[in-house]
Each structure stands twice: as C-alpha cells, then as structure tokens.
Amino acid sequence: MDERLLEILEDINPEVDFESCTTLIDDHLLDSLSIISLVAEIEEEFDITIPTVEIIPENFNSAEKLWEMITRLAEED
Image (cartoon, rainbow, N blue to C red; front, top):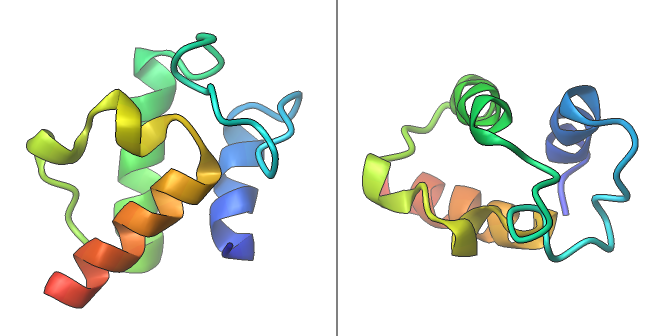
C-alpha cells in the first residue's frame, strides 16, 4: 500500500480507517463528489489516467483495490 494514496484518502475523509475498510462504496463512506476528487488527485499524484470504465465500486471499495487499479493502470501506460 502506498502512503501517498492513504494521505489522499485521509484528506477526503479523515474519520475512516482506510487500511482495513473494504466497504468504502457499499457503506457510503465515499460519495460521488469524493470519488470525483479522489480520481483527480490520484491522476495527478500518480501521473495516470483513470478511464470511466474503471470507475466502478469494485475498484473503489478499499484502498487495496484502489492501489491495485493504480498499479495496473501505471503498468499499461
């Protein structure tokens, strides 16, 4: 897990334990505005583009799944 990702997530919602939570979307801990901010910050921080087809609950339900998506997209570039 990348510290930069955890910092971005904690800036969006400091009350969530992102290292252990696996239901960020299912439990509405990230809303649509949070996801838009998250996508923009991830794209800038990691120099990747997140295609619309990747913005699905499975990729955003946990920090671990987000990190998997980020590394996969970075490798594809």
